[in-house]
Length: 246
Image 1: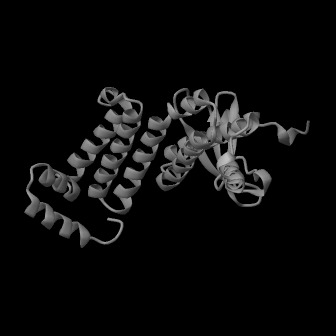
Image 2 (image 1 turned 60 degrees about the vertical axis):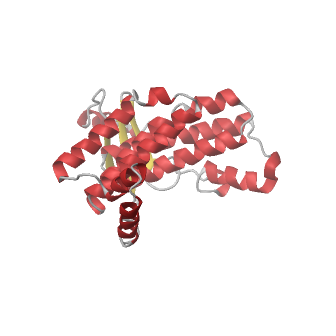
Image 3 (image 1 turned 90 degrees about the vertical axis):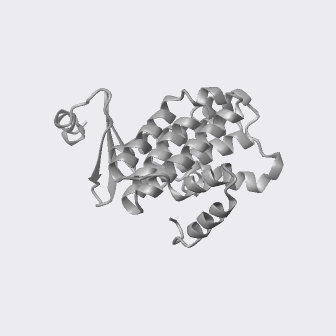
């Protein structure tokens, strides 16, 4: 093996830190950016666009895209084979690794994109697998993926749109997590969920540091709950006058 293939010096200059997501963007030989993640036994290198390993399964940008094409072609009779399920699992893992890198790098919009891809993978698996146990093995991680997505989306909106929108993003994310527990008839566990509690703490931090009281949507929900319909109508009008996306 040629000397230039030895990465001992690279690893020595970038020590592994247990419990820390150590990630960096570096320029590849052709000038494109790639992500590197330091792991205990070396490092992982990932592409920044489409599938992290840079492969194009069947010519598609991702394996999920390939499976979408297959499902569309076969219609309702389409069901994942064991081999296809295994390939989906590979994509689950790859997108997890890149998602945590984006979070560590504070590239929050890109973390949202990778979380959304993972959620679509879960939806596809649930819709097209005949193996209920395999589906559940993925669904158990949906609150975790939603946690990452909500955290990233809230911090992105905090920077780009303001603290009130960040608070609303967390409200929406908490509701999505609650719906997962509700689907499995475990709503009582939602109140004790540590990930949900972390989101509530982030929300409280935003309220305190940016002086955010009850948002317009929260005020609207309060008005409806207390049957103050005239106030509710006024709040709806005010929300409708906001620029799109806010």
